Image 1 (spheres, rainbow over the protein chains, first blue to last red):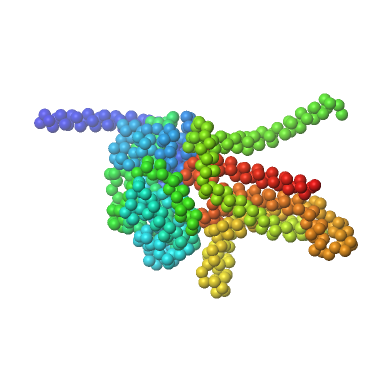
Image 2 (cartoon, rainbow over the protein chains, first blue to last red):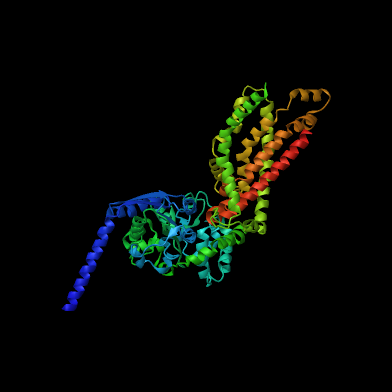
Length: 351
Length: 285
């Protein structure tokens, strides 16, 4: 009885404290300036994440500013170092790591950003100075007009029937992600050697029409210029739904890896308190589940449960889902430019 | 005119120059100096906070790949300049010599492509030269070829598009450099028994050479600094300094290396301009 009473009391106390904390949070006012990806991402992020957050925290205004790419965001953050107008930046993980190492981002407070507890270790980068919040899988897009038998494996890229019919932009994160995938297929560890992956790339290289599809890796499939394109899943799913299904998406059975997006609190932010509340919401299971469902970006929060249909559209078949990989991004950051250099010099320059 | 008057004039002259100099200083000289500083920086982001180093230049100079890229760039510039000048010369010569009342209209037509941006015209060339483009489509429809000929996504495509895109500049430069052409000299030569070919070789060509050299220089400089056309038409296979600077600055985020490569490009420019001035002086002499 007494034990129950104690538990009850403790629970009540905890509840009151928690209640006070929420009430106190809800009183936080200010503006959070977020800079992040542009296009459909921006639209979905504003509609499904920012609006929902502002409803919960009526005192906080979130202003979203799209940036053309993470390199440009990094340049802006560098310029503003010490006196930033940006509070939160959404950037590619490789850039996020760089920003953290340059002291451009600040460590989060786990007492405010409580959802860090639900964020896996690999996603808490550089001592919580950069947190992965979503992943966009690398996939093989195909034209449903010309390809009757959709590819199922990364090995299908080598099929001679696709001679001169593949678009593969590999001299950026796409190539850096493909290396560990091809390496795993050859049974090698990317931390030791990437020779097997480079050899595998050279096997499908003769099929490649362009290493730099213009305007992008989606449009060349839509226009029929190529049959296959190595590209990102999220935007392809959106284009599939909105552009008459010309773009089909194949998630190879050997599994894939996501281009990882990070959320970062900017060092010296004048609205750090409100910004961290926003980051906490962005890392919540609720926000990540919604974004997964609307944008087909894989969630990072470990408590998110996806429906079968959504999981299928993000990761592919059950087999592919089981084979899904994550990377040691801080390690990748140290080899990122070397790997791109090797792709450029040992694959593209000869094909 | 007294000395004080002259001094006053010079003051006014300086005053008039000031806005232009300021604009140049802010928009050109300052960024260039910043770039120079970045190329010697140890800070990965190229900020002024890093200490000084020669490592970025060592990376460029000691790497055979960049020598190849520099070679490619020179080759690209020379090829484009040669073809653009040869193709533009007859047009410019015609426009300079014609007495037709349509001369103004024809000149406007020749340089009208400049009204559209190079990006748009590059996309036009992608449509024409692509695997399913106008040329391959026609040849396939006529059963002259079975599989498409690779005319784009390579050095050839990037070169063809760049030649056409830069031709209006070549024509303009030649027109302004043809000032010394004089039909009376041609008539005199003809009267002294020279045939038309001889007139061309001995009179027209030498007199038009300054215009030709200016045009070649202009096209060369624009071609080796080109980024959009090699990138869009090259299919990732055309490695020139412009595309490498972009790659280092935006993909691998090595701003100091990008800055060092940009400086290398600047050195290339400067040496070509020195050669140009020497050549022009030799011609004048």
